[in-house]
Length: 120
Image (cartoon, rainbow, N blue to C red; front, top):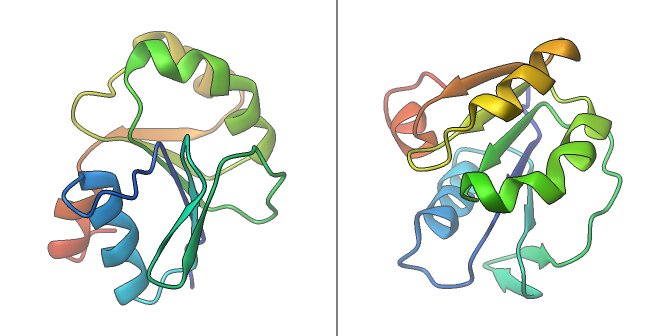
């Protein structure tokens, strides 16, 4: 099963973890969607700077701090993902409660570690 993944908070800077996650997901043949502040590209993947109503999103992996996440709560919930991954530095107990109300799973984990240990 292909786990279509939205990476939220993407940077076009190849040294940023969000950028590395997009590249690693793509190289592992996951369908990747990327949203960041600025439109750009990571290899063949477009970085969108608008909130698009994507269909069949399995996973949302966050690279936004707790404060920046607030404006995306409704958007993420509207996508009805199976899970949201809170990468290190993105932990957010307020958002966990909202996800629980909507029966959306979440985990505190590093996307890069999950991929490198075949646990994604």
